[in-house]
Image 1 (tube, rainbow, N blue to C red):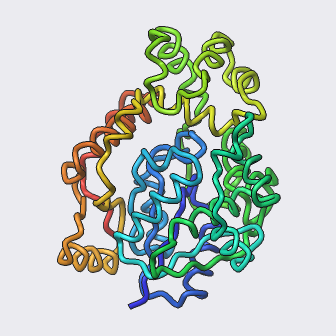
Image 2 (tube, rainbow, N blue to C red):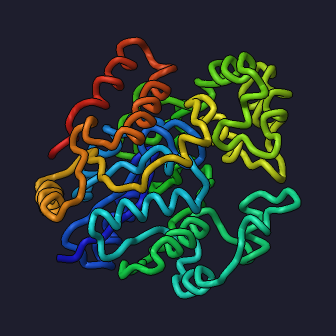
Length: 362
């Protein structure tokens, strides 16, 4: 049986994702399609616009057989750690190939670049952002090509075969008129109450955005002992002083504009904000055990049969929240608590209760 994995955030699920699913099946000829998906928060340090359960259910309704959660500690990190966590989940799930979108769609060049023995940290010395460092090391790379490069790196030493498909739009394109619009354009349309029904099959009610958390972030940052801030994850190189300096600005976008720079990208700032609100300590990350479980969000009967086979092979399947190893479980529950912060009392309670229930089976 051919088993292919894809890595996604579905924030929200849209026509481009349907295209990705269909092209993946066409290119790989897979019998089973597995997706590892970010949970309540995504790689750019933002809350998903709608819950992970809604997004996972929609993915299964549109051709995915099994949706597995990418743990928060990997989902809200830089491209290299995001890719490593996602590929580790798919390795545990027994895939023999993965398929990802790429702006260049030149797998041969991406594989050659992945083979180079380079040090991103060295290239970032002197205040470069990760994206600028990638440009120095490899030339100009777009967002999905940077992710693709890291997926291929994470696959090294395994027998899993990579495939790529051509992206149909630019990652940050804001054109909302297309049938296949970018997720950025769709979120922009939803935020500005524009009609986007032609581009997505999800009906989004009560969307959540990072600015909904800004007052809470201000409260945490400005009431905390500043000497303790360096112990929190991603609080490096004195970034806490920059955040404190501008945290009294009343508007979220004014704050983001003030703190982003050549050195600190918007995504870096947002991930740092997120981990502070989560109160993630560096020690929490350092002491995490290796990723050895699969958290099931949604599946169909084919996916359910595969889970049974994996369980018989000794893979830890977390169909229930309590089956997640404690160190990861603690962080995941905190992420659900934080995710529900800007919601109504009723919805917040639903989010917390849903976290403890079984996956969606279709």
